[in-house]
Length: 164
Image (tube, rainbow, N blue to C red; front, side, top):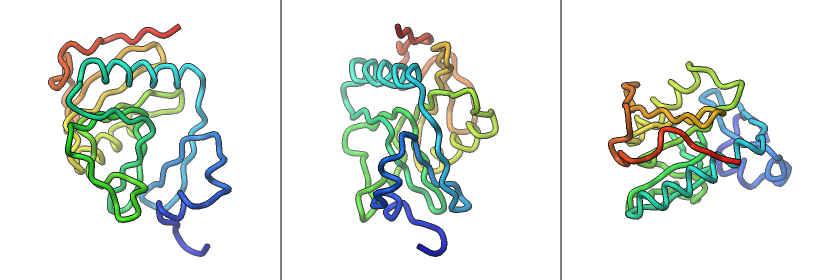
């Protein structure tokens, strides 16, 4: 295929479907791949399980693609209040951000990258952006970057995620 790929084309590409990586599409139309580690997956699963327990009025999705005007980003875990899911015409990505987007940090993630993701999700309607360090430490933010001592949507969500 010539030129930049669309998210729908990426989803249909059999060669890309077999990659053992998280795939995202940058604003420049470049495919970014992030290799996963077992601990990363354990943290995702634990966060998703806690969200299901503590936020029953919505849907938890892992690896959920969110499509903006010029990019597709895939938070590790997200929570969407019931009735807020909106998909693109091909139903391959959300076009409105979930209420909560969570990124489980990898060693290569930078503050600049997380700031850009937080802004991207916020512009599409995200209400809170959470990060989880490899240590399990949770941090909660508003889309504008304001740090919160706890989530406003789920105030009792733990500040430390424990996985074995």
